Amino acid sequence: MSEQSDKALSRKGQTVALVIAGTMLIWLAANWAGPALGLPGRYALLIDFAALAALFWALVLAYQLWQARRSADDG
Image 1 (cartoon, rainbow, N blue to C red):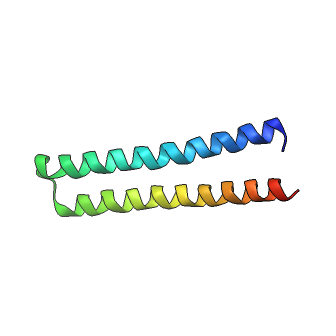
Image 2: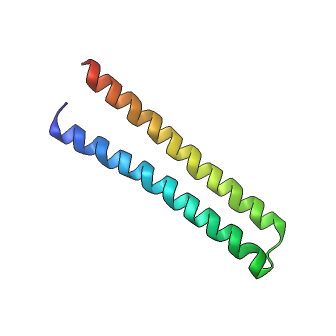
């Protein structure tokens, strides 16, 4: 594996980690702030769906990262 592709895979891994950590922090903060601000339950559902979408995107990126590392190890 070349140094350039290794750096690209490393950046992709960092992106996955930041998306997961950031999503969970924002989701926890929103679930705490929602009732404190008196927001209706439909906003909580919207926040949950946004968090699920972000985590799904991170899962897709992690799968792509896994496949790229796997193909680099084989070749």
